[in-house]
Image (cartoon, rainbow, N blue to C red; front, side, top):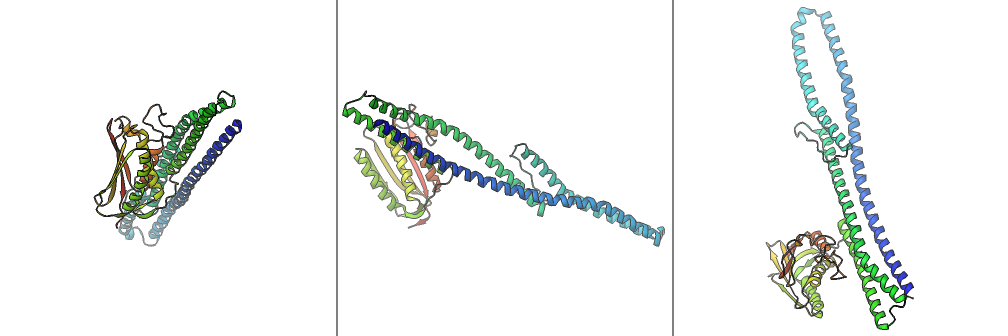
Amino acid sequence: MFKRIREHLARGLKAKHVRHQKHKGLQECHHECEQQQELFCHHQEFVRKHREFTQYHKSLRFLRPVSIVFNLIIIYLLFRWVGIKSISMFFAVFLIIKEVLQFSFLWRLEKRVFAPIDKLKVGVEEISRGNYNVKVERDIVADLGFIGLLVDSFNEMAQKLQASEILKSEYEENRKTLIANISHDLKTPISSVQGYIEAIQDGVVISPEKIAKYLKTIYQNTVYMDKLIDDLFLFSKLDLQKLDFRFERVLIGAFMHDLMEEFQFELEEKQLNFHYVNKMESDCLVSIDRKRIHQAFRNVIGNAVKYGADKDLTIRIEMKRHLDSFIVINIADNGPGISAEKLPHIFNRFYRIDNERTKDLMSTGLGLAIAKELVQAHGGSITVVSIEKESTCFTILLPVIEEA
């Protein structure tokens, strides 16, 4: 029986992990395909314009000798029909005007066409060597029309290539960190589940009370692993900006009143002190996704409960206006506080304040990272201040869209 339980748990976790990985893989693949398609379009546009320029350049090189031959023919005819004495003054003036016009034309051609193309050639060579941090400077006066558009297209392509390379490096680094953290966080509960099941299966534990206790621990470990996978899935969607939000205009005062009543009931059930104060003189409208903001508050308050004092923990929440454009919500507790060394890292993924990472099995280390991403997706911000061994206060800012 216990063998079947273990196999069922293993199949369930593996299936869920595979579903999440497939979904995440499809998202990353789709995102990468979109980037590659956009870069391909820019490259095709650059190739097309370069081909046109090459044709123009060939035409100019062909017209130069034709122009010389044409001028010689005109000079020959003038000498033959009019005579050298009659045309000497006319010919001198003609040559001067011609040379001035020709010099002006070639100078403008060099400045507006050949110089930018030489810069583009250098830029293309840099990109071909893998250096995407390159930009062709554009002369606002000279680079007009076709060449200016060509320079702009090249710079845009280089910026997108550089951004894509940076994003690729970040994803690769995040992937390595993610694998390391997942391996660490799943190893302990999986080993625990395996050990308890083997103890029951081998008959080491036979009393119903201990068996029930072991099964409860097995269940708690599987719940933790399930929560870890869910948090990883949610954070990956936030990180890839693929999470769907359902924003709606909400009266923040009424929304917070209902939300705080829910938290007050839950915390008082745990014999914890909870106080909520609304210091706003009038209600106002904000644009939020109720479910996501609820989750952000739950993560922050849950973090205070997990790492707060073992007894007499008090959580105080205060809401007020700031400069008529933001709602300020302070979430303070009288817990042990956070040291100055650890404070800058608490919004990092998989970061836990306790070094042993075992104080609370249900802590995945992603709660505050998810809360930060959710608040920022609403155009807001979340910050924290803490006095070690005294208190911690999180501050959430949400933009106001309209007065009630």
